Amino acid sequence: MMDMVKQIYEYERKGTKLQEKLNFMKEEKQLFFDKLQEMERQLHIANMNLERMHELETHFLVSKEALVKHQFEEEVKNPSLSSISFENVYVGSFEKHTRGIGSKLMSKMGYEGK
Image (tube, rainbow, N blue to C red; front, side, top):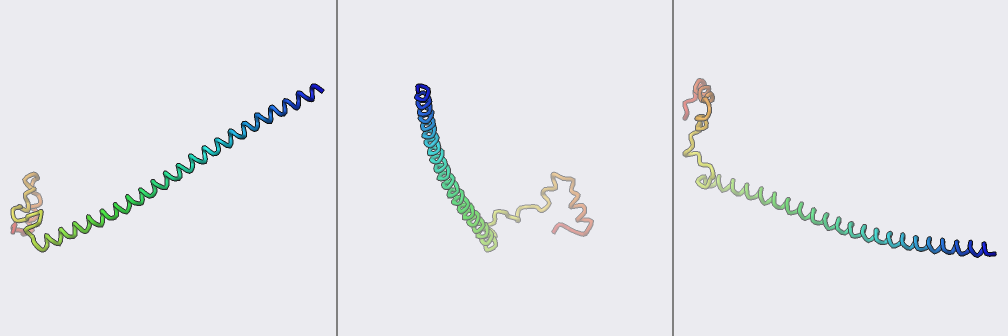
């Protein structure tokens, strides 16, 4: 009879340990679930930020393109506003750093520099 009582006691003790383990695993499962939800929330925020950055980049590129187009149109309308003035620039001025082969070839072809 004592052996049976010991066995029953041992089964109850094992059952209690298993129940504690099961409770612990449920708590850990809930913690992992909470962490997963937080990560999903952060991912959603990051995606929204990325979309907003893409919208801003697109808007910036469109604005930049419009500005360049406007500046070009203004330079065409009023050449004095041009950032590059060809009046004081000698076309072959870069040749002071070279051997002048371009001018020599062009003069052989009949170019007089006018």
